Length: 82
View: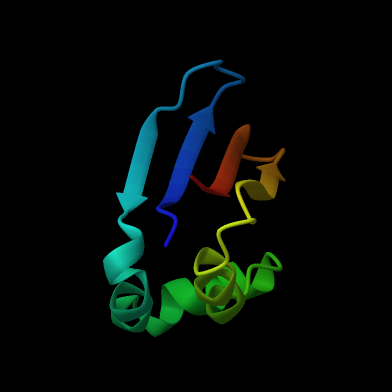
């Protein structure tokens, strides 16, 4: 299983301010531990956690899955499988 990486970029920076890595081996369990309010916020941005977990088990799926830009906050979030 691929690792899930979530990177948060602020102010147009080239380097992420925050990086969260969830190892593929625990991704299915970890996805169930995410607070409902956070999962709902992701869903509002078009991110389906169940689909990400499913994709992580496919060895052919690698790279950026979702890139969300919040222009009001000058922030970008990139979700990828690596």
